[in-house]
Image: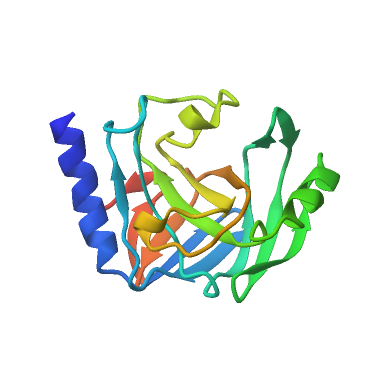
Length: 190
C-alpha cells in the first residue's frame, strides 16, 4: 500500500501545480480550471478497494462536452450514453439514450448541474464495470465526473443534495495539464 500511496502522491503533486485540465476522447473535449484546488490521493486509507486521484474544478470554469461510456447509476436506475455540454460551469445541454427523463430531473436539483468532482481512476486491478460505483469509479483507464456536491478538502465550493459519479472509459483518450499531455489511452505518462 505504501508503494501505491507514493505513486498516487507523485501524480497529485504534478496536478497540484496545474491550472488547467483538458480531457479529450470519444465525443469529448472538456476543459476546466483547477487553479488553487488540491488533488486528493485515494490509496486505501478510506475505501477498499481504492485507487483514484480527484479534485473539485473551479465551479464556473468548466466548458465543453463529455460523453460517458458507462451507464450512470442513480438509486439503482440506469441512465445510458449520457452526453453533457457545459458553458461557464453549468450544464447547458443534456441527453441520454436511456433514462433521459431521470437525467433531466436530477439536473433540476440545486447544484446538480455543476461538477463537484473530477477524478482519474488508478486501480488497474478492477477490470470490469459492476454497477457498484464505489468499485467502478476506481477502475484504471477511466475518469469520472460527479455532478453535484463537491468535497471541500479539494477546494470545491459546489453544494448540492446529490453527488452523482458518472464514469468514462479513457482507453482512447488523453488528458492535458496546462497543455502538457500526461495521460494517454488509460495510462499515466508521468
